[in-house]
Image (tube, rainbow, N blue to C red; front, top):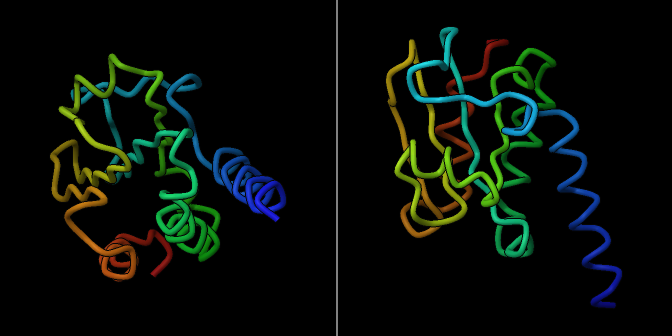
Length: 127
C-alpha cells in the first residue's frame, strides 16, 4: 500500500513538473522575473507526501486554464542558488510576484493549503 501511495505521489509530482517550468530549465533570479505575474514553488522532493496538498493546489490552479501553467516555476531544494536568492529557508514555500515585486509568500507552517488555494486562485490569468 505504501509503495502504491509513493507511486501516486511521484506521478503527481511529475505531472506538475511537466506543466510548470523548472529552475533547471529557466533560472529565475529575483531581478529577472519579467512579466506581470510569476508564482514560484520551492519544493523538497524528499518531503513529497507532506507537500501533496500544495501540489494539489497548483494542479487545480493550472487546470483552470493553460495560461496559468506559464507563470508557475517549480524550484527544487537542489537549486541552492535560487533558494538563497529568494531567502527560502523552509519547504514547501510558495511566492507570488507581480510586476517583479513580491506580493505574497506562504510556507507550510504559515498557511493551510485550502487558504492558499483560495488566495492563489485570485491570480488566475484566465478570469
